[in-house]
Length: 361
Image (cartoon, rainbow, N blue to C red; front, side, top):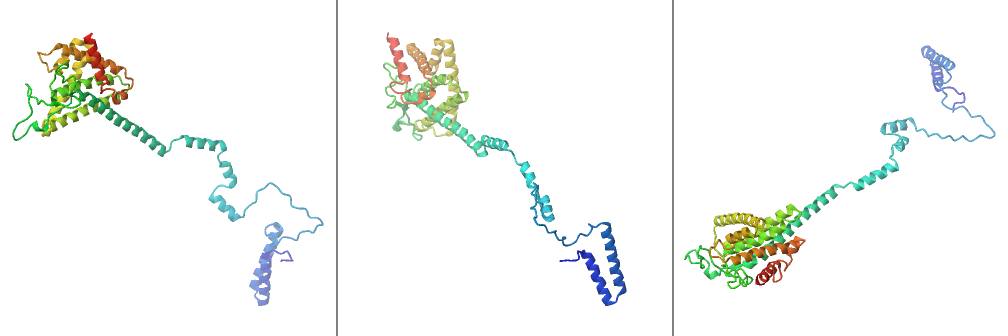
């Protein structure tokens, strides 16, 4: 407490003067008095230069009024203020920079509608899985198509009469040197092998391949009407693939062709024959039954000059009947169901029944 209301610097000067007087040093005394005089002059010129260290005593009043509250923000100490200004914007500026409710809602809507990386990966996986599943479905359907057509001319060669490498003995041969087999249980009553009311074809590899090609061609005519060109290519590709696998299996097991190079050469020849079958039968469908009959004669009946042309005409009529029946099937996948193509009431046999009835009338 400073009762004289004297500034700290003046008190310091007075103290120095008192010490100088006691010590008897005139230099220290004159210096202290000079500082005191200079301080008095500064105070007279500017009374607020050195404010007193302690505030003046407040005047006593009977009723002191409470300080009036104003809408001002509290000021922080200089140190805190400097720290807050250097570290970041004030709370008032933060409040002004905050996004509005509409902006936040818009951001949330965009984040909800925008697909994440996981969603995009899941969508890609679903599309890939869907295409892969469709491929497997087509593969299974074409296998069913192929089996229904080749079953009518299925044959085998008993193991006891298969060609032996050491002895050279083998099954009986046709005039062209083909191995002759025997019909299987599923084809023993087939119209293709029946010598009485059927066509009397020999159960050989050539007969199997050409009659199977004929069934594959009729299915190809129906598959061409599909809306998806990509799916049609898959159907055609797998149909031919099933044929090639079955043909190579017969070469190995029934005809004992163990050399892979020879089998590959035969498969290439069969592919060329398939391309020729497509062109020949397409020409026959466009130009008429006479051209179609000549294509059937060359491929199915091997160009036999002594052929019964009534049989050739029956095959042509059967082809027309099958195409008409297949055109009534709206969904190609329905053809893969049991009994639709093969079986007693399937399209293959049903078309033969129609041909038989039309020829007997």
